[in-house]
Image (tube, rainbow, N blue to C red; front, side, top):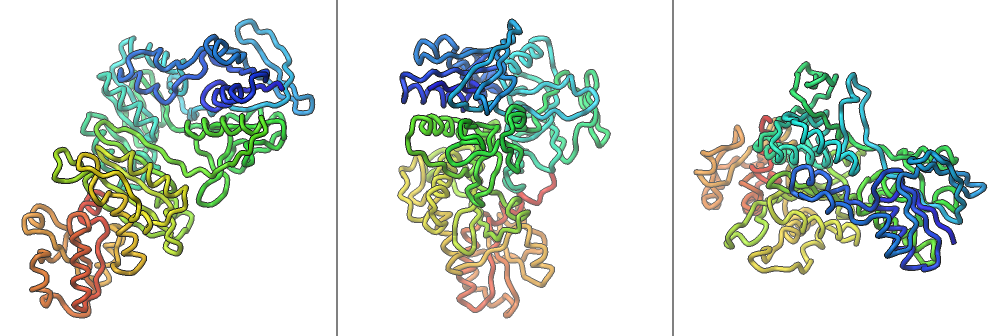
Length: 542
């Protein structure tokens, strides 16, 4: 069996090495048009910032090491020009010599990845991207050449990572994002602390605008602002690399990636596709989607090797779990965010909580913001987001596992998670989310979201602050009446009968207690979800 793999990074090399472990006698050829294979592209920004000082640490294998260990024929600087599905051949050009050859295959695996989006702007040729080791070398040369200012265009995960690491190198950095927030996989109230973190470390933010023109040492924005830019980096996003597939007549899916089935087969049964070029199946809808993540590329590369050797394989839908460091904070998300649910008119229930990442009495407890999105009919977890200095990865990984396993939100309360004071609380934040979800499901309490508050007060609801006097004086939601929680039992008669009451505390827990108390005294009460902290984070002027 001869297998040709086009693309020698995550998905392609996972397929190649797994295939060799399963079949010692297969003839495996990997074609890579770049000079490097099997490198850690997710680590590239951190090499620029000096966090990973040695460039060679990113080069996990060479063609020689792959041959020595796996007897894989890895050909760098070899570009696949065309595929003939009928003849089962690939036309290949050696980019060093220009010579063209034709290679026959029994099975072909496409893992060409995706290419960075470069907008058609005047002067765009001066902009750089960060996708592979060669891009890193180009950026490194610019830094070594004396670049002192940088404008990063695109405020997604890669753009934020690049901006942070250029700042670590001492550059004056500005980040430009067309949306009105950074990190659009997060909802606005979750992204705001990350914008604050960027500006606190000296990165200028220009949100809600775009680059209009790249000049010799500046960038002109659509709003007329001119930014200094010895260095310009495009981090707008990527598009699937599908030229070979299109020209070979393979089916292209509705999202613009190569269409595949649960075994990663394309419309030609002898051709498989993995990685960023291939469409995934969305966990929530079962529909095609694009998720350019390395963990999925590696998983699907392994799956293809299993399929080619006759093993039983099971394609699983993708939930799209991702995480990013932003200086001292971490942000992570899994599943759908609220913006996407609203755009799809998908019913959903929201809860926010702000626990400490471990027991509050143990030194070093750091605040954690957690958001859960729930199907109100089935209690299925639709998505989750977390932001904090510590413990974010742990909670999102648990929630991603819960989504995959089909646990309902109230069932999160019953998870037996590792507990000791340095690591968590007896009621882990994930358990707490489950308790809140159960209260909502059983109508033990009703909540109101921060963006729903103006309509509620305009309709006549009384806003009641149940925090301490000191907290109230330090900052309160305009128009709120103040009765501390500990006084509320004795003073509830001061509240008008028959008027809806919206209670709030700092983060929601005391508000829940107040809502339960007042409900049992005959009042109609709603708790402001996430309390003053969520409201203040979401509504303050950037």
